[in-house]
Image 1: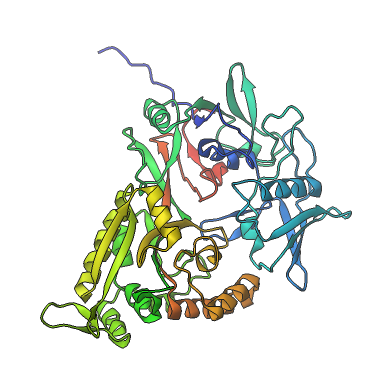
Image 2 (image 1 turned 45 degrees about the vertical axis):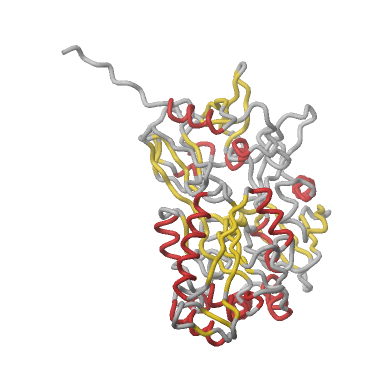
Length: 481
């Protein structure tokens, strides 16, 4: 038989949207945002336990009132054109982020950022946040006069190659010599169909996806997949302003009717981390002792409902308060199969206790409208929490659809946000004990994302929520550089 010439390994390439901005702060293209971690760096970055690791920040000091953080920058850091990094660059970038849709919500308590005469960077707050570094993985950039993508201090820089675009190793980054690829071509892949076609044909070597999403792409080619934890919380919300769920005993009972491990492992095919608290179980602030009080336990749930005044009618098997049956309306959006399946499981579990459930399945816009009007007893929701896992939006902010109010829990939340060091764990214990007693909503799990790399191109993948290419310098690869 004729001798076959060995084929060289495929060249590693990534997709981008040529019609959208490459700006890491003001740009809104998800495809382009995924490149951010290769080109830019922040003061900190979050690892997969959601612990902030210093990158451009060398040290931090906090004022006595907790309202000002002063950062000393890493010496010798420079942008990809050799311009030295200064505190002014940091201040300009953070102030720009405060007005950008991608970052404005997480920086809502930041009142300003300013460079000091001593070269330090000071960030001021309207309320103390002892874990502010967890929010500061925001890219620090050097704007260019021509309006093109700003320069960064990261591993790579954008470089034009004729009519094409590529990532070229940044010679001013200390890790440039150990990167797995000297250059990474960028291929147009702006929409979902384009991404799947480019990945399956080999035009793009790596993509991210959410296998739990109704819009998840069914990639057909062989690939290595690596999951990473996220801050995207799947939960059951309660109407606290009226109806059966205004009782904390009922809310606690309803929080115990679903097996969170089964939800994560079966319904979400393992692409989730079960959690009974609104913080990732991978975080050192997760209190397993407190969480146990909300774990799956139908007998305990039944006892709580009895304590709330409900008794079971032996003839029909339903729960009644005096002569009124315990009946609730469960709201879910009809365009999400996963949440509809979850609504089915919740309905069956509540029915075992004797609760009558009416499921109201609505298109997205109608679902959001019903949430805003409070037209529900329970609803299936999802929220992407910030890196410090502050649940304020759900308890006192724009996502408090159930109009929940609890002064003690609000105070405990403020104390936890402000606490630092060893005091943080003690404050967390108090907060989560209050959360368990009041059960303002029922966390179920935190979803996981997935990085897919075409088979044989790379291993030792270490993706994170904010950076699919986290520690790319540690990848093992067979691709041409």
